[in-house]
Image (cartoon, rainbow, N blue to C red; front, side, top):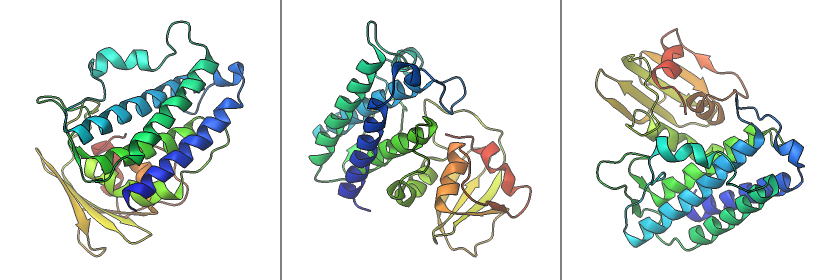
Length: 261
């Protein structure tokens, strides 16, 4: 799927979500989401900031400039992005979410080279090195996954996300990033085989993680068979749609070695 198609999928998912949010009352926006300790308004604030941040980062990449997802530092800035601004009503948040999504759509429509590299200032690792295409897939991930988390009638990730999300999640395994949660250091190899065909070999040593496309018959310490959707769910800590087959107990250690998201 090319960048223009990913941008179209983002616009479609954002528009559908904005439409459903606009139909909710203030009480419904304050109701719990499927994420522990997060109400719906918290989730909306979070993905609203994501639209603003990804838009800013894509524009910086197109200008050859450095940028950060959290310019003020993740620990310092993130809490404020999860709540309405002073004097901002729930309806204001929903309207602002829609406006930021439209701005991002406009920015993505201007991209000509989706391989353009985004970079962070030296010494910072909010998201790590990305292409503009990868930033777009991260936005599609955020919108589709949290749309289901909101529990407002969207029950399935888009086909577009299921098609492009897996290799991007594989690529991010083991990166040293600002939001890393250190998992238990389990060394070995896992072969992840999607029902749609693509397979990936992920290997973890004491001090490094490697990952690459693989043949479906390659040897590994553990093998996991599932649809692409469920392999993504495995890496994001979300519920599975179907059956996930583990070859042995070591294969089941994957989410311990790589806790999501």
